[in-house]
Image (cartoon, rainbow, N blue to C red; front, side):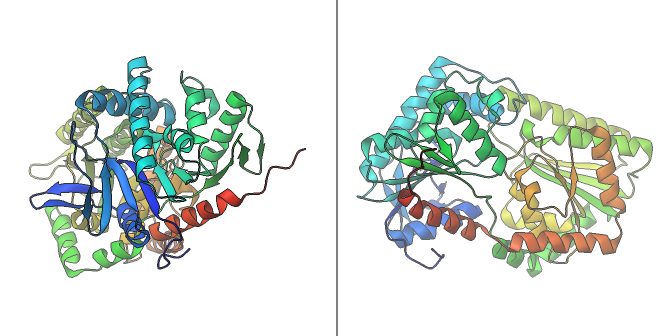
Length: 470
């Protein structure tokens, strides 16, 4: 199926959030390539997006935005604390990211997770026309596939996990591990970002449920689940078009001038999340200033930290630590009017972000674990000048594709420092060769192609041949 073809069946999308945000005039589509890729498909197929408005206790009636029907699911203030901030983001999130923080396993939170997942399943069952395609997204809704199949076996159900799926040795800590696996096996197609995630899930299904697996097909009593790998991408054309604009070029020049026209601008753009490795990145930068390998008069760093999950204690602690490090580094190495670290705790607009990418000579993407990390791909897409260096954690999903980056283990402080020095000192010819490789890779597949591939596979999944007895 291509982007211009009309799907044979209506498509129903389910995600924790609806793809819209409130404005003074009502509702407008949320920014982001995923929304831009999926909304036209819904519009063409006559489908619906089911999700939460983002406001607690908001019992909004169904409405439409730009020709797409939206079905709100109400979540109470108490459930936001238990289901979303609690089980999803204080339980599953750290566990799925290598248990970087201790997870909270609370039965009240689990009960809320079950209740909200059931509400989503009920809304989908009531919304979907006969024989529709339902595509469910991410870790907040892992029980929905089974719950939905129990009500509507006529539906073709897909699920895509945007974050990593952990190895069994970590996943087995979860008290409700079998219920999560059983929930996901309600799908016809279960998609992951990386082969490792698919492999981890299959092993968990085998260990916990003694599942029969052959060629990534898992046998269920009533159907089969195909496990696939679908690395997500970005809207490459939009990033390149914005990067080439006159206003972006002007803003890029303004940014560099405001930074004091340094020789090298090092850049980090992340949600303020403990999985992103921001602290170790700042410590590596400080160590290089201390050793003299970087010069505060020639090298500056810009770190954008987008606020997220501010009600969760782990995120509050992370913010305090990052701000402490920034203050300490600037106190030691800055000059009057010229800080060596420029720290922005805010959400930047798309155009400002693209200008900042273009202003950055070295992009530091060093998460401890990441499902994909689209910032790495956006940086390469924005560098239409063919220059710039990407330092990329080997534990980001993007490392599977962006092999022309300077790959690094962010847990190794010496290796991280050396990677930064390598990027800063890299000869122009090598920089351009590596950037050409990065840009060639991201242009092979944009977010529209990712969605097309998933839905094409999902269309075919119910026709899978039965697993042969061995």
